[in-house]
View 1 (tube, rainbow, N blue to C red):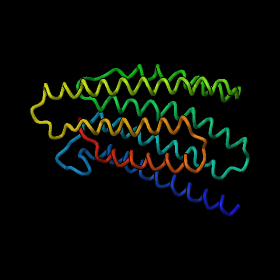
View 2 (cartoon, rainbow, N blue to C red):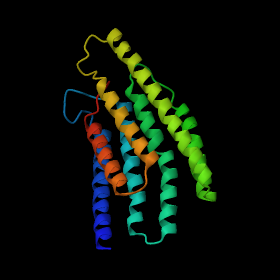
View 3 (cartoon, rainbow, N blue to C red):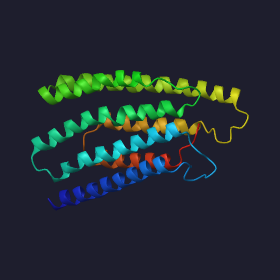
View 4 (cartoon, rainbow, N blue to C red):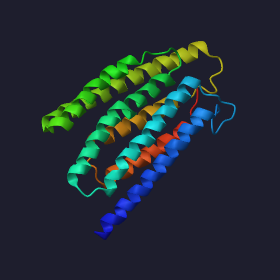
Length: 225
């Protein structure tokens, strides 16, 4: 019992750190024009705003999950977790994909396809919350996995084409560090993967929070690719 209470306390503190870092990153990106580590770099306004919204969603979603550590009823915990899953599919996941698209500065890509590909997950989450059918979860997992694979293929191809576009159109590539786009893509896909295979155990909580903390650090160093 004591060990369980101590572990919950650690998780609560970790969630608090993540919420604070996400809030700071959001405010920094909204109210400061420059890069935190390179004052000579000014990221595009559109990229900064979308990234700030992503961090705001992370902070708010962590606030939503926080009461789980104070609930004693399994039914209440499951309900909070299920609603949180729906909120994730409405906020964090589509916003993460938006940031990946906006990072590519060769052209302004339409964002409505993101809503289209996330819609089945939202519908599935609401349906599972209503009827609690395990078959729905299996279908959602399969769809989510296929979505991640398709997103990976699309982004790798787009980044290669974007790299070629940079070489063809820019003489000064000092601040066009394309590898950072791959870093962000890798981090977000890792978050997606952990979310997909999560068992809500201690390893899941520690891994997810560590990765999201790294993602906050990337936000402070955001560059105009």
